[in-house]
Amino acid sequence: MQRREFLTFSGGLGAAMLMPPLALAQASTGYRNLLILVELKGGNDGLNTVVPYSQQAYYALRPRIAIKRDEALQLDQNTGLHPALQPLLPLWQAGELAIVQGVGYPQPNLSHFRSIEIWDTASKSDQYLHDGWLSRAFQQRPAPAQFSADGVIIGSQELGPLQGGARAVALANTGQFINNARLATPALFSRNATLEHVLKVESDIVNAAEGLKDAKGQEFKTEFPKSAFGEVVKTAAQVVANGERTGKRVAALRLTLGSFDTHQNQPGTQANLLGQLAHGMVALKSSLQELGRWDSSLVMSYAEFGRRPKENMSSGTDHGTVAPHFVLGGRVKGGLLGAMPDLARLDGSGNLAYAVDFRSMYATALSKWWGVDAAAVLGGRYPTLDFLRA
Image 1 (tube, rainbow, N blue to C red):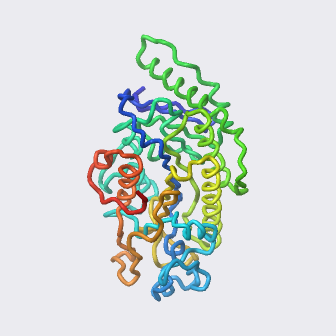
Image 2: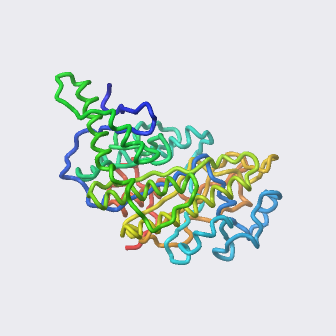
Image 3: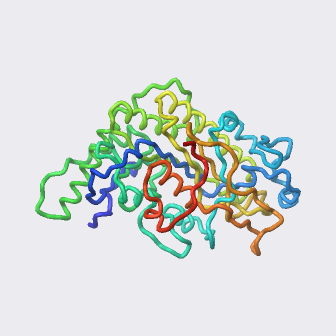
């Protein structure tokens, strides 16, 4: 068994990974700032999320599924939000919501599997990396030793950006993870290196469970939505709350909502998912404010790709190249960033050109939020974005 392999319980809800030994004295106090990633699984349609209603081409390309101008929530004279995102308007008005438009990358791949791999590893389209970009950040500078884990994945078993080396825990809910963790035994000394590694991984699982064991008991005044994503947000809030009580924090959370793969009957499906996202983000803000963590939390959305500008014959949209993404937090500098999509200038495949490389979002979080060397993690320099207050 190799160092980067991990142990997964038969229940499929708990996993821990062993990070190679690193100098804990280098641990960054920047990890006191929490990073929360929200994956819009399946590829959200950006044009019906952030609506370019001033462009007639938008309505020409989407005669059946376009958001009507008088239904869009106006952000400026050219752009509005999908009406299901109404709960986010107070965040926009408070300057705590930034929207980065036209996010993508060169030579885009429209396969779900490969494109999300590119986003998770921050690789080039023709480059194959094993480690997730967050794992490389923790290899570059480890999180404090007293943290329960580097990151927690909620709502999915896929480690994504935490694959390949981070101390990561994947769980659907804290209680079930803790129950599963009882199957693991603390590490004992062994002369067999492989067995010693397995025991050490088991010990990490037990320690992570110990750090999370009181999380499910936290009471909030916040009312969490009665939806699948609402439960994911509630679990995330409980993990953060436990860290505040015990000092056993985590540096990153990844939440998952989906599927946004709307090849047919998009209007109803997307409205439901965007409504879950909006209500979930409002509850997340409220719970983090209760914990005194809203100003030290940065929330960013991401997805493998967007959708094509032209609707298909099934009232849906097919895989496209770019999409807008949301950035939220108490120290976020709100507004529109990037470039509004130009529907009069599509490429030969009928897709939009990207305006912002997704690694610029990562570079901003790494360097400005955590104080980590972004170039060393990302394998190159990418311009940072102006979505954080000093």
